[in-house]
Every structure is written in C-alpha cells, then in structure tokens.
Length: 493
Image (cartoon, rainbow, N blue to C red; front, top):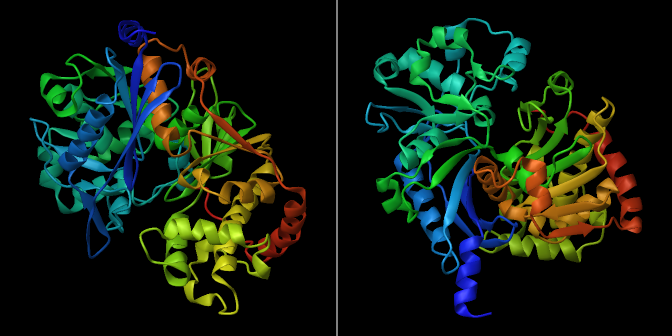
C-alpha cells in the first residue's frame, strides 16, 4: 500500500480520545472506531494535604495535566487522520466553586477530604440514611460534595453565596475545554445533589444549602455532546477548534463499557486504589437493599450498575509491601515475582489486607509467602462479597478484571483459582479510558449504544482458566479465612 493510500485510509477512519481521570492518575487512549488502541498516556495527579483531614488540589493544574495528556495522544494520530471527538470519565466527588469567569475561588475539595464532621447535620438536621440512599443512589458518605458544601455553608458562607457556579472537577475541565457547563447523570450521582431516578436536582437539598439551580451544571445522559473545543482549548490540547466533547460517566461504569460488562450476570472487578465489584442489575431496588452504590449505567433501556468495594485496599497492601518486601521504586515487580514463586496457600499464611495489621505477620514466613498471601487474601475478600450477594439473588456467570493488577502475574490467575471461574481481562489499565472513548463514539453517532460499540470493536481478550489443583487448595483456605474474617469482608459503599 502506498503512502498516499495509507493517508486516504486514515482520513476515512474515525479516531476517538477517551480520558479517565482517576484518584492517583489520569489515563488516556487514542482509539480507532474499530477498537484499536493507537496510543496510551498517563499522568500522575497531585494533592495538598493538611492537618485535620484536609485534602485538596489545584483544579487548573488538573486541567493542564489533562490538556497536556490530550496533546500527547493527538500527536500519535496516524498521518492524515484527525480526532472525531473526545470524552472524559472520572472518579469524581471533588467539589469546586468558581467565579463568573469560570476561575476557581478555592482549591477543589477531594472526595477523600475528611475535614467535615457535624456540618451535614447542622445544615440538614438528622437525615434518614435509607432515604438518602433511595434518592441519590449512594449511601450517605461524609467525604463527598454534600459534606463539602455543608462545610462551606457553615464556615465560608460568603464563598458559597458569591460563587457563580457550584460544580465538580470534571465539569470544570469540560468547561475549560468547551466554555459550556454540563454534567452526566452518572457523575452527578457523586455530587449528592441529584435525584437519581428523575435525573434532576433534588430541590430540598439545594434549598437547605442555599444554592439556586441555575448555579449548577445541567444534567444530561452519558454520551451527550456538551460542547466543542474552543480556540483557547485548541492551543492547550492540540485538537482542532470545533472538535466535539462528549459527557462521560463515573469511572467504574466507564470501565464496564470498555470491558464489555453490560448484562446482568456479568461482573467486573475494577482494581484501583479501591477494588470495586461492578454488577449490571435490572432491579435498582435489589442493589439499594444490599447497601450498594448504584449508577444509572445503561438506563433507561438497559440495566443499572451496582457496586461494592474493598476500600483503599491498594494503600493497605502497599504498606505491607514496603514493610516486608521492598520499598524500592520497582517494588510491585518484586511483589509479583515473589508471589509467583510461592505455592498456592502461601505456606499456611493468611492475611486480610483490609485490617492493616502490618506488624502482625510472623517472621517465620518468607517474603514469597507474604506476597502470595496478600494476593490470596484480596481474592478471598472478593469471594466473600460475591457469596453474600449470591444469597440475595445477584448471580454471577462471568467475571472480567481490569486495572493495574489485571496486567500482572499471578494475581488474575489467583483470583480465577480462588473463585473457581474463568476470568477475562480486557483493556487492563485503560478500560476506563476505552469506555470514555466509546461514549465519545456514541455521542457522535459512530455507535448506537454500548452494546453496538462493543460489537464493533476488536479489543484483545485474555481468558484465564482456573487450575483445578489450586482451586482445591483454596477451598480449604477460604473456609478458614472467611470464618476468621466474617465481619471484615469490605463495604458495599
């Protein structure tokens, strides 16, 4: 094929950019409409931490990191090709106030910020947690925007009153790209101001906070075009002015789209700072009863999404690794190699990583046994949650794993062996970004919906078959582990 023919072909292909703004890193992909990942890019996020639980960040810096990552992805375009559109998904729940020019009035509150205490009760009185869960879709969590805004109402009311917009960090980045304000109903769930079933703002909450509805970004379905790249954003990103920007979703539902977990009976294990189990479910109330985090996902025609988590388990595991194995930069490669060298059952050692009992591991065990036990303990905790939900009618017929650990060995194989089920990995660390690219394609009409997108794409799928001998070993180990850890199997939220 001649250079001219290749250039003509590239002009016919449609390329999409998907961005996944996570807690610790921003990940992005340049993807063809056929599902070929042309380029991957990553940038590390930065936070400011102060006494009293204050965790905040510079929203403009987050925009600059995102814009630079988009520029690097766009630079990887094949000759003659252009970006048809882009979309951002995120781990949101980060609160921001901006002025009438769209500039931040304060550093953004991180969803991890815990400076709030009694402010929600001071503003709202005693909230019924079951009612909040039914309205919002998530149980009441005192480190998310409802808490941040209550804190501002109590301690900085003039800032709240004088702000031109009340938003989250993802909405702010979309505004910087397009000059337009908008939010998708999935990300809006983490705002704690949306009535999830009506996909509109919960007015009684706004009244208590003194926030008029016009100060908030308008709510739309994921996959809706929010605007186009402005001339200023074109300079920042390297994209052409007028390139469409499409609303994404919360990060785990985005990863489910990117991994093809779209139907009831499928389950996604999404491995990040927390490990999250994501279930497509037809009945929202079933997930609410189990105190799970609920996402609109493929509504109104398709299933809701329901999530449980092993909260901040990666942080806890890192403490073990640094204490017992290595605190070097390449410690995770060492961790994986050691775990692979140990036998199933880790020489009888069992560790519940959520307990963070870092000094409790006996010196008699090798580093390899400790590494293996950490991986096995995480898999046991997953199985405990899955069994609990199975008894409530949430059956799992297939499991897919994404995130950093899904691209390592032997962790995915250990999960398959413990569960006694085949385990697939699709798009690994970039599943959330691939899901955002899919939403960009839906917004542009390249795909009719998430199912059509997955049918049209040619993502590489790796399937791990459970080892029968290892599974038999793990049956006995799991019984002992679960009996000792019956009250510490993770959270539904």
